[in-house]
Length: 608
Image 1 (cartoon, rainbow, N blue to C red):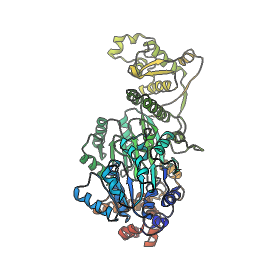
Image 2: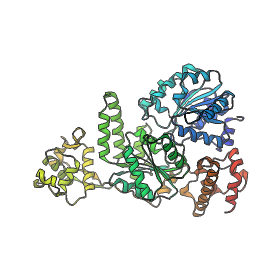
Image 3: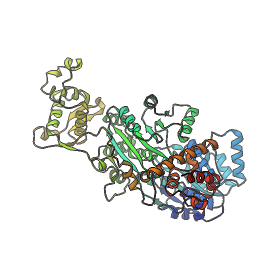
Image 4: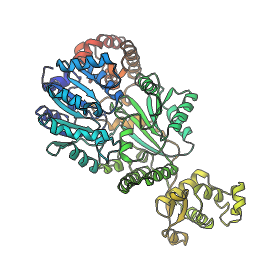
């Protein structure tokens, strides 16, 4: 493709300038340098290899983990006038032959394929006779044993450096801690390449954690409070729960569908396509759904169950707000989830893996139990320091209330002791609240001095107190014995009244402030217009432009965001361009899209 990389950035992709680190990465790869790029989801990783592939002679080979992701990215590239294709098992023989013919005839700028397909002897032999612009390894954390989505097939990619020593190789991921980074560099032989860390902060995402109490009610309240056009993803740990939650959402009038590995390929494709085409509002999935979802306007991600580690949480929550507009991440945190996660980890016969996964789970629990800025904790895990509190997480916007819990803690600890340290939290709470259940009577626990002494507090309140006592080390939860609670040595001074204890009141409901969206919008770079800053008039025009976009997308058979992203429509609504030249100055409008859609959008804007 003709032009400098800056001309391609403007004319093909519709951007007037690069984001942090993008330009130096692009220029280095164009020169033939290797690169390892860590850039947050929505930070513009794709441009770091797409533009060099268009500038260098030959075809760019992109390793991508999922068929659906390949299709989404190729659709978006083609809409920008780029000669792109994917080569995978979704193609019939005729289509596959057409792609291979285009590859051999030099008619492709970018080819996407899975590592399993690329690393076959037959395909590597095919590449030997071709001019290759670069190799791009997307979702590179998959290559690392430390990475949260480790895939053995990725390991063979380490052979590329030896097989094609003169072709630049760029590896990219949205998340990698120190262990994962060093593992990726070693496995891909990238020791000589430059490392670029663009930062992990996603200031447009508001992080919220609620104690899990009647989780479906919490979820449905959260979704129902949002504008009806906003789409989101809900993650749950089991296939059964995924299907149950999806069905209950549908019964509640929310367009939702389940996605997990137990469904047929056809059904998974149907759900994915319906989601990106805005035919359904919510996908409820296991982690099988999501790696690299190329839908920029996901406005919320909910973890119905606790993620198993910070990397998974960061990657999954990062699927919200990839366009940079305000978005929400909600985690429902229950200690039952912690017990399940720990038992799964400890079932492994690999001591090193147990050590790694326990470390990662503990970090996730620390994030969920935080009583100060969550973003600081999240970024610190990846080695990034935030100078001040973020102002856009639940702890910053609605700091937890603290109270003197000394007497309540003594009641709880004493009750654990009185029942012989042989029961879990649920039973302790029943005794404290004076339950009249047959089990309590049969055990004689209605005769204990602690029976009923906590009747003034709800089950949720006592649950929160017990959870915090576990976290602070006053109680030990023995997950090998059905989560039995036992006293620790630290509990003795508290029981004897030698120290006082302050705890946080449980956060069960999401507190919505009038300025929730504005708080997120204000964290976005000042020059970027966002939904939160549109006037009422502009908001009406924005919705009209969304309708036009949907109509064009349906007729063209592509997802709406392939036409234009929400960021582009927001900027159109705010700036109201009236000429083709004006429209070309809007973010995301390149020459190809100007020619294809410009007249229709200008006509709609002129109505206003």
